[in-house]
Image 1 (cartoon, rainbow, N blue to C red):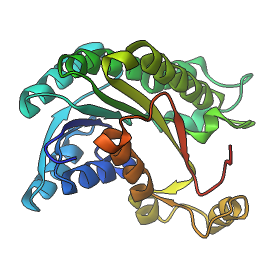
Image 2 (tube, rainbow, N blue to C red):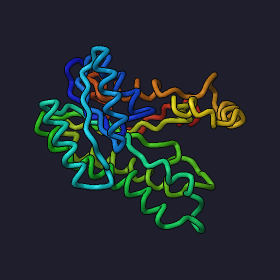
Image 3 (cartoon, helix red, strand yellow):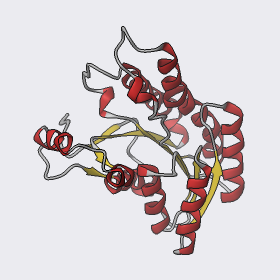
Length: 252
């Protein structure tokens, strides 16, 4: 990853923040973007003080103009673009995402506006810069919800299924021009924010462990490691894949 120019969108906390830290530790030049600009500013300052080369920009991926402005500013700060990790989601809506009969259409529309349409906007913004740089990598965060059958949260599952389809389209359309496009599909990951809140019931963790041939639930660093691989030169022959990082929770 040394000296690679990488944009991470959805970087203020959780998996995104861990990925920024992992990439910076491997020598990448990273621009962290998030609607929570205070969060990515603080992350960039902390990592830079520890020797990382990290900058930050604000972005709201539901608004096309801010996507274009953020990506343009990121490329200006980095000088070029070798890869992008698109990790943003509006997780506030997931708690109101009930079932196909009852879900408020505003919840459905907002979920797709961020989780799917927003990722299309980001793809459209970063692709020209990657192509101008003789290719590069796009990585998306999908979800096991796109593969499974969940009696709840249809909006979220639909958005992630659509994201997998978008990823495959990018891989097939621009693969011969040097673009790789892949999704990471995490299992149950305990983010630092979830741990700090103390709001995750022990029974929930036990349930995930009982359904998974693993000794633990996921950590953000597990996903960051896969993102780093897919964005690196070592991942250049991985294209068009949904890669499950879930401790064996889904064996396919």
